[in-house]
Image (tube, rainbow, N blue to C red; front, side):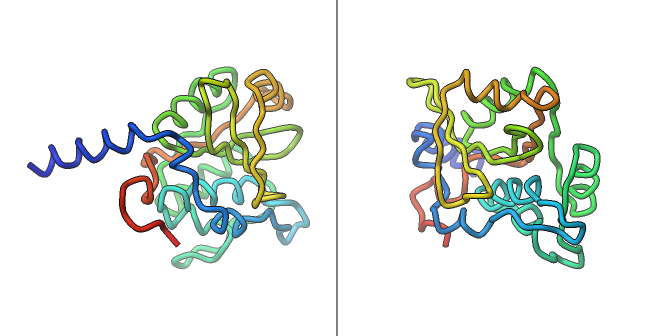
Length: 187
């Protein structure tokens, strides 16, 4: 019976539009990109903190803060460092590089997930939605976390791959966010 209830709850969530899965604006502003001790931005961790908050994954939500004995993750990052930091916090992430990232990103968005993506030269942001009917992606840039930006697929692909072919990060435990079902919105 519990399995049937879980399946029915997931199906009701999956039937909602991705816009209903958007994290409240007040949550996004918590994840402004910050300079670390080396003077570098921490966009990889800011982007993935948004992802963690969206899915209720505390170890990811608090990348930019001390968390359960772990120091904040600050300064620039790259795939192997990011995965090492995830493992140290007990997080299970996919880290995908290259031309197949677009398929992974769209798949993740269709299941209600956010993901961190490279966008432009030397920057990682959060992709928060994809509208198939208009072929547009919703982006949240951690330099301007309170604002959404919508771009068409051609622009998205070009900017995502402009520096090194593209990199995306997706938590393996991610699905629709805690507030996607008919409960109280997460504060």
